[in-house]
Image (tube, rainbow, N blue to C red; front, side):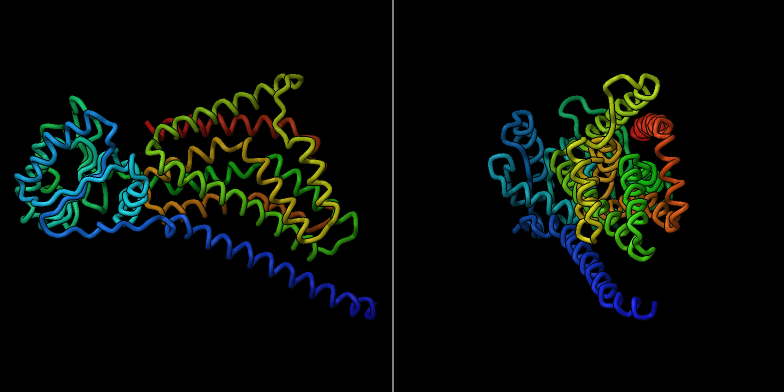
Length: 424
């Protein structure tokens, strides 16, 4: 036995080395992937404005926008002491889109306060006007800019015609909505006096954690992991070997889901319609939940939510190789194939993240969501380190697959309703 153990030592050290290399490589790619979308955005040349300058980003194709800018916005700015106005059409000049996105990220302007017209003004303080801000609000701020105790202030008003309200924000704390005829001085007087917050940050964190965990109770990913663990025990792999391969499998699923999230997050931000997409994602969750319930009550209906047979065959082939690299590939395949089944939840959460956070805050929430997403798999890996437990749990999963479908359907419907209520 001692000789056998010594002969296995080089192989064990090699497996440990491969495991560490895989973990470090995936970790490095995750870090680079988290930072790259932000730093690869073209940096603007006119972020720093001189005193008495204004910078306007707009869409030349919008006729009403052009009328507002030329007949109302610019004259009001000039009357308020702005001597130089720079106009940048981000539709005809694509590089200006990157500039505007970079300014929004650097100033920390959340997506729900960004509009199709963005005006940045430097006069005693930095003022940001998003959308069709009424003339009297701009004039009031410009006139009293020297008395402001804020380094930055933002006013948002999206409606082109007959607006009824506008929103003001001091770049920290809550943003507040006022009737269109209420002077901006109401916000300036009440700012910092502890009025009720309209920010969703406090409710966003528990929402991300809970939905991530519930989304992670994914029948497909769990079934493959149980099959994987049972197979490794059948071919008499050690607990340490099973733990390493299971960890690589879980990490690779995290890897795939995280990068899907990064891509969706940037796409949602660039779309400029995060709340609309949140409604679409919530509706998709309700549809998928309803289809899952139909599958439970009417099992003969062709509504099977499972990995495609061809992909499952490839996944089993990689699992049967029982190596760390094959565990990585199996996890990548499962991560890609499970997204269509539960992607509605992911999209809905990401739209809420995009609408209420800056880029790096959003990436932080994305990490939290995906940690919670793989947490059920981590629990299963920890509890199935024993051959007997692994077989029992695998048998239970197979015999109760219809109940799991029912549970998934109920959870998705409840989440869809919760998202809609959250948005409302």
